[in-house]
Length: 169
Image (cartoon, rainbow, N blue to C red; front, side):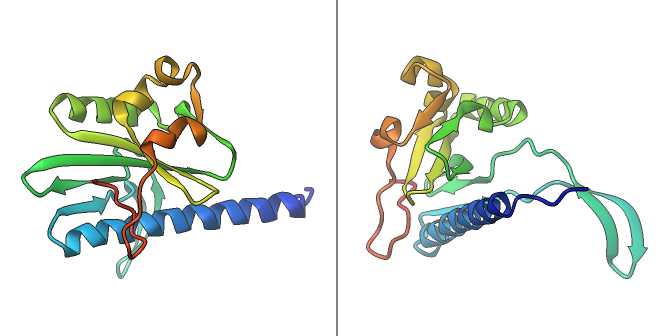
């Protein structure tokens, strides 16, 4: 069995670390809204299936394919909001990054009046809040099934004075 290319391993580790940082920024930004009483938005737990009980609260399990968006919650006044978060270290983000089951879930909730978005994070550190209707119809809006940062400029998320992402403004 051959060893992995060290350069590829390093690039993979860097990408994973940047993705984790992106998620931490989202978490702290949602805490900003919670602490001010504007919204409660929480991370959706990854669905897990236990396949063997080892006793004493230990078990063997695997993560099932998820169908729900990464974050969901309620904005003050009662409106439901959902976010699917995607990060890339490359120059473009493919529409297919949102899985078909996730798309169906977002479609159903949007049809009931929920505000649904894709949060697109890029290696530049910029974050874009793309309305689900725009992401879903990417080919109509951008002429192709991927986007680049310049395409998303109108959806750039501003920062608060404390650097929290103003995801609901």
